[in-house]
Length: 377
Image (cartoon, rainbow, N blue to C red; front, top):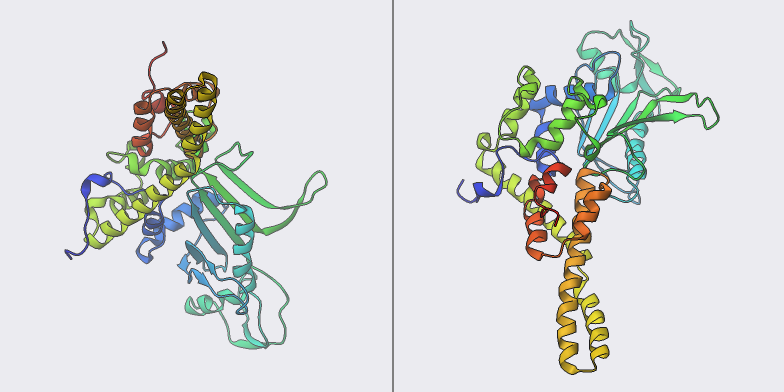
């Protein structure tokens, strides 16, 4: 398939799991049901492991032509009728919480019965949902159907999980689980079948005891955040068959030419987004002209104005690039430590700043970033 061009110098050994292609390649294919099951078990930490995960159509049609279409990254359910919506969002998105609630309405609405439908008598009380009927029949757990006259509003659980490449405002933990609780103390649980989970990758800090890699959830966070920077599979993953499979799938060398082309396209879209973000903050020329005019007026010379404008452009460009760096690294690594922010704002050499941009994809912690900063005078 020679029409798919691929430059091996533009990628690492493993794909970036936080791109659209990488995330769906690892978690959204039928052959990888064991991977998504392991991931959901780790994220939700349920008392009983999930059984028989099956993918649903990620494009959810609205109830009328005037309503918006819902398109999920991953949409699946288990044999018990529980629904799971998983979204990967690398860059900040306004109203991400509202988006999660909106997406939850689709699997909830699908559970409503429309008119009289056949119901079944099950040997287990939990097998009552409309979604489980076909699965129960397939497994031989259902008895003869009877006619249901109305729906009693009983719902199965819906879980909405957002994997974020940035930290939400006010977040202090990498994993946040939310259920519907009462406003008044002691904030007792009101409804336990609708749960929201955010995985905020920049807040993962494996040096802290709560993020020990002995826990499955932390291993998945570590995998998602650092996969593209690994040169080989870390020891902590080698005894787990699911992670062994995930690393094999994620290795670029094991992909078809078409998959490698799609991976490169996904990376290029990511780089384009970063470049666009940087452009929004490069207001140096405008600021430079303002500074230059001020300097020129003080000197009262036309030549002074020209020199001032040039100097102002450089100063403004440096300031704009520093602001862009601060934003990019705070999205990737979390809140910027005060001492590092002070060092970045003190930079005066464009070459140093541009070197940080060039190594942005490989800088995965604040210690590594400091290696690219000049030593203190």
